[in-house]
Length: 166
Image 1 (cartoon, rainbow, N blue to C red):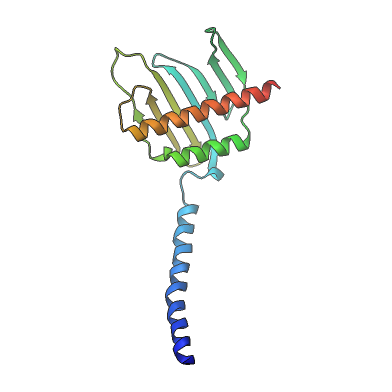
Image 2: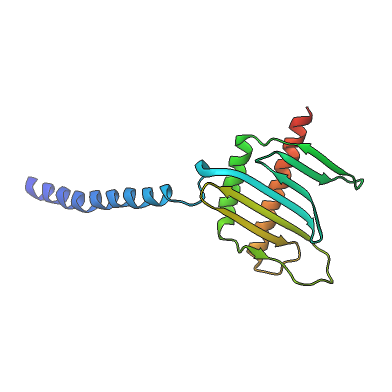
């Protein structure tokens, strides 16, 4: 009876332990080699406006921020995003699958005047740039993910501006 129990334990351990070691090795390598890790993050660039004039711009590396206010005046300021803000944006982009978005999500219809958004995440080894037109007629999930990321970026910039004014 005791030898049967030890055989079962040996069998279970001989299968599960190598499997667990392989999983830790494989997924550990995947995580350490991930091209878009926050540890390698450098900056975010965000531009929006119409195709002919992308007047609204933010660059987290320099802190330069300019936008058109409701009166139509161009406001320029230095805006600093905290590390938590940047981490939140990075995670939000990862959750939405930003790294898999096509680089060009534009419409070549010159008759329709729609807002254009350019989002760039810069890392040590590479960057991801997406150009998105508000009237892009691609897959609904992709359009929704772009819109959610844009709203998150705009909300983060607004919150940072309000924090700075206090």
